[in-house]
Length: 215
Image (cartoon, rainbow, N blue to C red):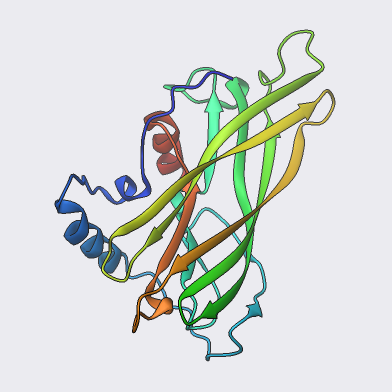
């Protein structure tokens, strides 16, 4: 499917325009202003499996031990919905939609790094215009990102992945899971619990506007 994907990193949702040396200070201030909750769990074993987190259109934080990075999905970027008339989205013109459903993670801390094994579950739904005439299946691919944020508010890394949803005729809803491994190197004295890992769909302007309109 051809899509005009706008380059939109997650901080644009916060209304922050970043360039060059402005990034460090601006990102740090933005993160502080959101006041995302810190996982309120006592330090446990360095490797622990936590219950999955259900995403419901709000910014959610996965519960991990305090010595692990925060893992979160941003509410406004937790789903992607496409219409044949993107400027005037109505149900009859729905092509297809996908959303984060649950996240799981394990965390292992070592002296020089911290590694998260992340499971991301997605639900997809095919709209009335999603299946082309005479086609036996429809394939839609959506970009989603994973960003690592340092304790100082710097973007340490940002990776974009492709979520592929393949619908067969008579199958309007599907579920898919992706598994990712994220390792963050640590310098001497760094607190791995102060890092953040943020995920979300990478949206164009129409897709973001639709998510905001539903709030």
